[in-house]
Amino acid sequence: MNQGAVASRYAKAFLSLVEENGRGEQVFAQVRGLLVDPSAVPQPLEDDISRLVQLLRRNKRLDSLQFILHDFIRLYCEKERIIIVQLTSAVPSPSLAGHVERLLVEKTGCKVLLESKVDPELLGGFVIELRNEMLDASVRTQIDRIRRQLVQKNKRII
Image (cartoon, helix red, strand yellow):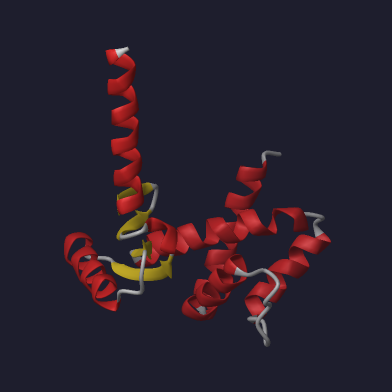
């Protein structure tokens, strides 16, 4: 059976179990943490997650765990109207993060989970990633764009 189909079925069932038990937020938070750093298993692990792992082990599907957890996150976010946004800036900027979060809440009407990180290689500006879209307003990208334009124009001259 297709890995995606397996992950999707288990993720849907896992979401139903979590909703039945009323532990959605807690499980969602732990699953996100596990996906960010798989070596940092929280103690105690939510019972629902332990049950999922035991079921996968019993069914010899443990290799699908990461796919299932990613699908679970996607399904949970769709159901709860949550958007996960990654904001990368050259320097720490809490005011930018707050502004981006407020703007997205206004425009989408969804709850926004903003993950901020710093990348000094951007030189300045920021990059916003949400869903499958990216807004790159970094100085590094603008310099690269200018560099490519100059190279193209110089090739025409010769």
